[in-house]
Image (cartoon, rainbow, N blue to C red; front, side, top):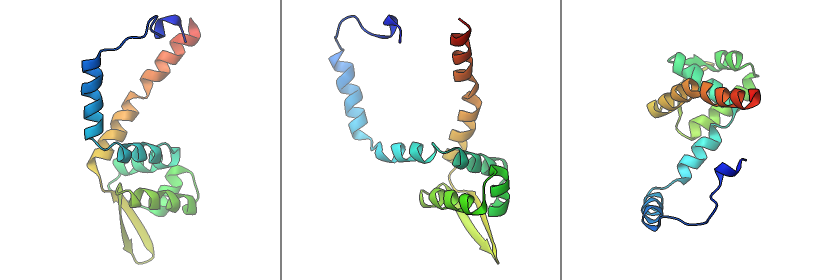
Length: 128
């Protein structure tokens, strides 16, 4: 980390710090932390993104798309279902899933669009 990333002296704006701290305390962040932990798995992001692209998919389709076993896909789908991200319906011996939460769809599609920016920043640092 360069010297420019740190303060040379320790001081802070008490009003700003108090205002932000109060807002953080007013909002429960535990669920947000748990959501990002849940989304920190590549298979789960693949599954959610697949369900952003297709309204509904069978577990077998999801397993093939995510390039994992049906058991692994089912494991991740159960976690997403418990968190309220996906909905489940059974048709005979087939299990179908769809996105339950429109906010998650927006979050995933937005973050996929932003993926290019950290890579550009990293590439610029390597080339310097």
